[in-house]
Image 1: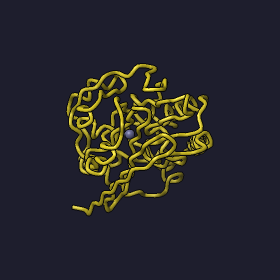
Image 2: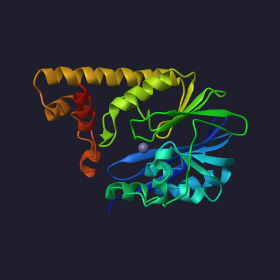
Image 3: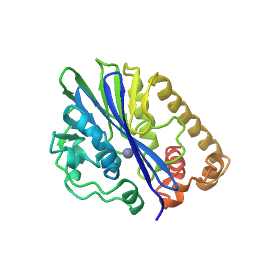
Image 4: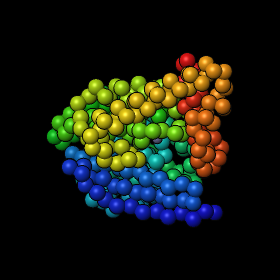
Length: 268
Ligand SMILES: [Zn+2]
């Protein structure tokens, strides 16, 4: 077994209460956030970090829970929170929340196995205590992924759409072309603040979203140019993404840059 360290803290940015919890194993360290504003708790963190999230769950004042997508680091404490408030998720995942989530061992070890929970389909808009929210379909990371837009506050909660501008690895079932389309979609909304489940609060959000769009378009151009030179998917991957991140082997290539290259090649 490897050494695991866990930590958590509560932060506040504008009116948004945030929990920032980190799990640190020998081969990787990952941070996951949950947010609460105007009575809406957004994403619940991982089951493995339940104790670290607990002080925040106690402090947060909420009457509904909204999940951006059905992944174990966002739904891990939903079973606990459903005793306090109804849980909403994209309608394509409401049935899935009631069955044991099937996840590979390395992810179960890291994030924990979420307990099943009851959920309700989220509608295109919903209201909280003072605000009206728009639910924007932003597939790519997963098919059921949504972003939550609060026009009053000029804020958007983007789940795992953004994470970082220069993405080097994605999951095998992610679709980077859909991610690119989703980034362009949210770019047209009016907001300054972004709340990302792994990067936390991001000021000057449009700039960072544009950086990611530019980066992905540049990568696509390079992939197609190398392909025209006769290079195959593995040669292109080695050339553009030479770093062998430990997660690639640890996940048995469920996480890999090859999934980025493959999707762009398929379109080209
Ligand atoms: Zn995710």
